[in-house]
Structure formats: structure tokens, C-alpha cells
Image 1 (cartoon, helix red, strand yellow):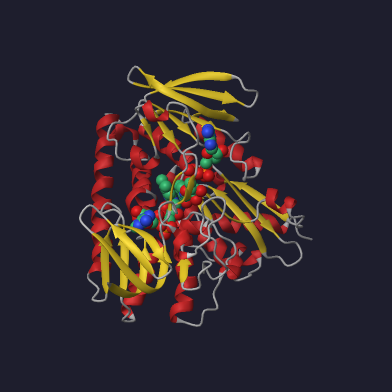
Image 2: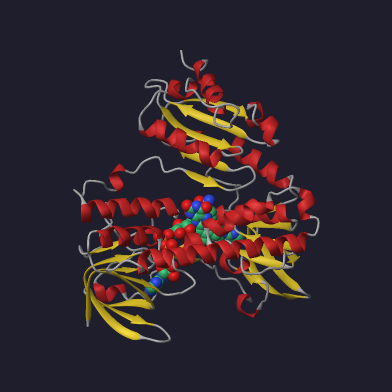
Length: 458
Ligand SMILES: Cc1cc2nc3c(=O)[nH]c(=O)nc-3n(C[C@H](O)[C@H](O)[C@H](O)COP(=O)(O)OP(=O)(O)OC[C@H]3O[C@@H](n4cnc5c(N)ncnc54)[C@H](O)[C@@H]3O)c2cc1C
Ligand SMILES: NC(=O)c1ccc[n+]([C@@H]2O[C@H](COP(=O)([O-])OP(=O)(O)OC[C@H]3O[C@@H](n4cnc5c(N)ncnc54)[C@H](O)[C@@H]3O)[C@@H](O)[C@H]2O)c1
């Protein structure tokens, strides 16, 4: 039986980066990926990269989209071309290493030192000293009557494979995927309705930000059925019929050409036989880890979505840093040091956030001053013609440090990283107020946003 120093299960962001580092140190590594369509993991094949390619195409000028079906088809083709190239590059990055073997098979544990690999062509067992579980997450599908008998119902992965633009798209779920897809498909020319079980639109955001976003999405003709659950689906002429139930139990019918299920994602632990390895999971199926991402077995780590942390590619990468530190360096970096995790929701314009907003500051009883500014105040919006949006910043009136920032404006996914760096460095808000930014740019909006704090601080 072949023995490795490390077996990594799942070709995710953290695992593939770790595999390359371990190979550079001369370690023997087996990378096990269940699907030849998934070398490189979720991000490059079915998530961040392909969806952002489509979002980018969707934002192009209207005259290019005159034949919307044709335009959409060519956007899907472009997306497929890029992901295929990335997949190949990711495969070769590891397969070309002398001490790495890539196996295309589904892995499951036999014991805490042995895994079984199963594919259409091979069935074998491997042993290792150490294991990294990096199996990601999968769509969480709530119980919906008629799902298995109904056509034109898709997960985010499946919808990206359909090259026909749905005329009417129903989306169940008003979270990251639901809203990004709503904005994107509306830009491509679909009529979009979002069914969201949450009573509040974007409940985690401050109401002024959420209202600005909702107004912007409604201006794209996106409709919202807030506080409503999708409970049943059936075939209807060339599309689907959906039964939607509000909190009072009243039922309504919606019809559309297609339905996207964007109702959350759950850790991918089914079928791994973790009990045979003595690795514990929680009641949501996530692998239980300590601050160093060690599982209940000290020689087995879990990295990325599967450990139940925030589901972002950059968190999988930061998980990698924690494990790399233990394997290759002094092992001091841990979850305890991870603060101010930013996020960007790729709407049009993008919503980005880091740290506290007013809602969270109030919940935590934290003293703050706040300043806000319309995106239209930034001179660059006269050039990019993207004047929609609102910017907000919270500052600690005692220390003058930045507590948080929400940017709903063009290019906010770039700008937010500067704000986070200032927060991590514990700089005074005046550092951003007075920073020399190039001109004309969206970033220079930070000068004006933080200048507004002056008047709030005595
Ligand atoms: C539509 C969509 C858009 C997204 N957009 C963004 C974004 O813009 N920015 C962002 O930061 N995040 C985004 N995310 C989230 C991000 O994609 C994930 O958080 C990230 O890819 C998770 O990476 P990972 O390292 O946990 O594992 P993954 O990249 O998910 O890799 C897990 C791999 O394990 C394999 N696997 C599973 N079980 C087994 C097994 N038993 N044996 C062998 N192999 C197995 C899977 O096939 C998969 O390739 C998005 C997600 C979705 C669905
Ligand atoms: N830009 C990004 O970084 C990005 C983009 C896409 C996805 N992601 C990641 O992927 C994860 C999964 O995204 P998601 O949007 O699927 O999950 P989510 O948890 O963000 O949102 C799920 C939504 O579904 C709703 N819902 C649940 N059951 C429902 C039902 N029966 N009917 C109607 N609504 C229902 C919930 O109220 C919630 O709003 C996110 O948590 C995020 O971390 C990140």
C-alpha cells in the first residue's frame, strides 16, 4: 500500500496552496479530488471566478446586449474557456511536482491513518502520517415538494451550465448567491424575482445601506417577496410553477422559466466516514476544529468551508496560513488572531464591508461616531457614470481608530482592502482622511468620508 507524508482530500484553495509548499520542502503528498471537472476547487470552476466573469459581461453596454440570448451564450462560452484553462493550470501546478501525486477519486476514511479511494477506474487504499480535509461545501436544499419531478430548477453550479438565458428567473434565497445572481441576470435581461424567507432584506446590514441596495436592485426591475418561503414546485408549460408561503401561512403562485435555489451551503462531510477516523462533526455537519484547525485527531486538520467557518476563498487561504505555520514554521498564527474579515457582495455596484456597522456596534454596546456620504460625491463617478451608492464609516471617539466601514459603490471590493489594512495597523482615522490617493479614483472618496468624522469628534 502506498504511503505518503500528507494526504490532502479535496483540491480547494487552502489545500492546493499547502500541497505546493509541502512539495517545495520535499514532502510526499497525495492530492485526492473526486472530479476531473473540479481540479483547483470550487472557486475557479463553479464559484468566484466564473460568476464574476459573467457579472463582468452582464455589466457591458446595452448596445452589445441587443441580442440578449446570443450575448448570454457567448458570455457562458467565455466563462467556460477561462475556467477550463484555470483548471488545467491548477492540475499541472501540482501534478508537475516530483513529490505530488494527484488522484481523481472520491476519498473516505478507513481509519485515522488510512483512506479508501474509489473512482470508475480505480479502487485503492493509501496511508499517511498526516491528513488535511479540504472538501468544501455543497448547496443546502430545503425540503421543497415536487423538487425531484420538476425541470428547470437549478443550483448555482447547474445554472451556470445552461447557455439559454431564462426570460423569467425565480431565485429562492436573498443571501450572497441569490443577490449576486439576481443583479447579474437582471443585467443580462431576465425578469428576476427573489423569494427570501428572511423578514428583513439583508438583515445583517444597516437599514440605510440595505434600503439603498434594495432601491438599486428594484431599479433593475428585480422584485422581492420578503418573508416568504418557497414550499413547492411543479412543471408549468415551458418552465416552472412555484408555491410561495408567507409568515401568515398565506400561499401564492409564481411562474417562471427557471428557478435558482440559493438557500445556503453546507459542509461537505457526507461519505467521508469521519467516524472511522475518530474525527468529530457538529450538528451542521462541519468538522469540529480548534484554533489551530486541528480536528479531534491531532494529525488531521480541516481547512476551508468544511470546518464551518466563513465561506470565502480568502478564508480557506487564511486557514492554509494557520496550518502552514504549524507545519513549516513556528505555529503561532491561529484563529485567535483573525479579525476584521471583510466581504464583498458583487452587486452592481459592489457592496463591501469590514468590521462593525451601526447595528453590530449597538448590539455590542460599543461607543462610536459615524459618517456617511453618497457615492455621487466622489469625482470619479462623473467619469465611470456609476454615481449610485452610499459609503459609511464608524470610528472609536476615544482611540480615533476605525471600527468599521461599509462601501456600497463602484470598485468597493478594491477599496475595502485599504480600510482593513488601516484597521489592522490600528491607524487613526486621520490616516485615511489625509492619505495621498491618486486622482481621479474611487479610493480618494476615503479622504472625504473620513473628513466627515472630524465634525463628530470633539
Ligand atoms: C456561486 C458561488 C460564488 C462564490 N463567490 C465567491 C466570491 O466571489 N468570493 C469568495 O471569496 N468566495 C466566494 N464563494 C465561496 C467560495 O467559493 C468557497 O468559500 C471556497 O471555494 C471554498 O474553498 P475550500 O478550500 O473550502 O474548498 P473547495 O474549493 O470547495 O474544494 C473542495 C473540493 O473537494 C472535493 N471533494 C469533496 N468531497 C470529496 C471527497 N470525498 N473526495 C475527494 N474530493 C472531494 C470537491 O470536488 C472540491 O473540488 C462563492 C461560492 C459560490 C457557490
Ligand atoms: N461574494 C462572495 O464572497 C460570495 C458570493 C457567493 C457566495 N458566497 C458564499 O457562499 C455562501 C452560500 O451563499 P448562499 O447565498 O447560498 O447562502 P446565504 O446563507 O448567504 O443565503 C441563504 C438565503 O436563503 C434564504 N432561504 C433559506 N431557505 C429558504 C427558502 N425555503 N425559501 C426562501 N429563502 C430561503 C435565507 O433567508 C438566506 O437569505 C455564502 O455564505 C457566502 O459565504 C460568497
